[in-house]
Amino acid sequence: MIVGVGIDLVSVSRMKKILGQAWALRFVERVFTPQEIAQCSKTLKPEEGFAGRFAAKEAAVKALGTGFSGGISPKQIMITGSVKRKPSILLSLMAKKVAESMGIDNIVVSISHTDGIASAIVIMEKTLRNF
Image 1 (cartoon, rainbow, N blue to C red):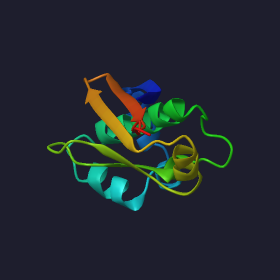
Image 2 (cartoon, rainbow, N blue to C red):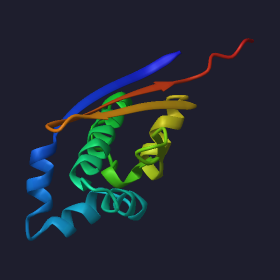
Image 3 (tube, rainbow, N blue to C red):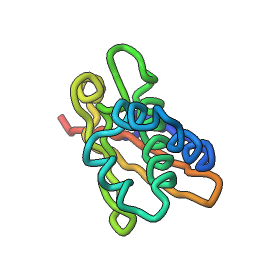
């Protein structure tokens, strides 16, 4: 049973502009896990990877119904997978607690980009149990 759906769009050019700022490293380290940073940094267009992952994080908190509040931060939502592998989401800390309290036991994520836009959709499900 679907208990949450979230979708988000991020401008790739805006992410590229952010990554060119003097404070870019501080932003990246505040929002992304070391694994995400390593994955995005080794691509030809890191701005696409960062934009897609940021869109997925935003979509995830929309699906949880919390936004980035109540102790949930972007780094608690890790997007795994590479360009050639299906992405997935790993939750930690408060994000994981909220998902567990909702009975969520499966999270599906899809990320897509064009030259201008990165998009992500997240669907959170719980399994219905027979009595």
